[in-house]
Image 1 (tube, rainbow, N blue to C red):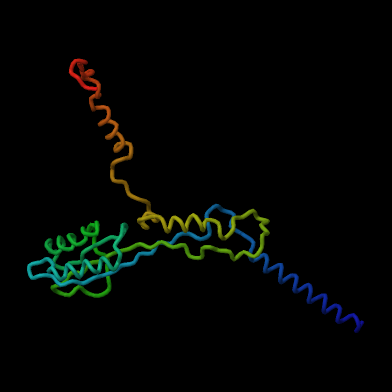
Image 2 (cartoon, helix red, strand yellow; image 1 turned 180 degrees about the vertical axis):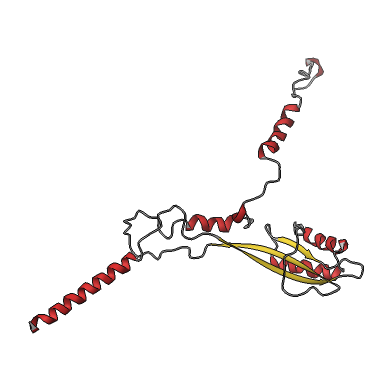
Length: 219
């Protein structure tokens, strides 16, 4: 019996090792039976603020407009960004001055300014730029160490390419949350404008062919 004891220990150790390898392999087996990908795009809202001094009667001086323009340029203002004005006095002149600078970047000032940290001091205005950023955390996911798939489930990396491309390519990241809002004019209505203009135009040959005499010379 004592001579068989080491063999039993070796067999037990081999069995424990094989069970451990099997359990580690099972950890990488896909378990998602649905078609929804495990990793979904996450949209994050970031707010950037700029405080500028206003004139006594409202508006911005030339130097403050230049500072605001430089700040927009540093932010690399782009489509999808939202610009709002937090003015305690709600001066139309100040709002128009900010909008003039924003128009240089083909942007508009719209919406209510979100809540920001700190208080807007008297004689100043706060310009808030809100930017949406979309990412897909955890992608790509190559954590699976086994090709075993007894449940016929989708892999953890399933959907990473599509979701990553959408997060990178969609210009307005907010559209990933609730979709783009319509303007009230469908594509069919806009296409019909060109068709109606083409149909309403008189044919070029309506007046007939121009009579040309062979006696008038020419080649």
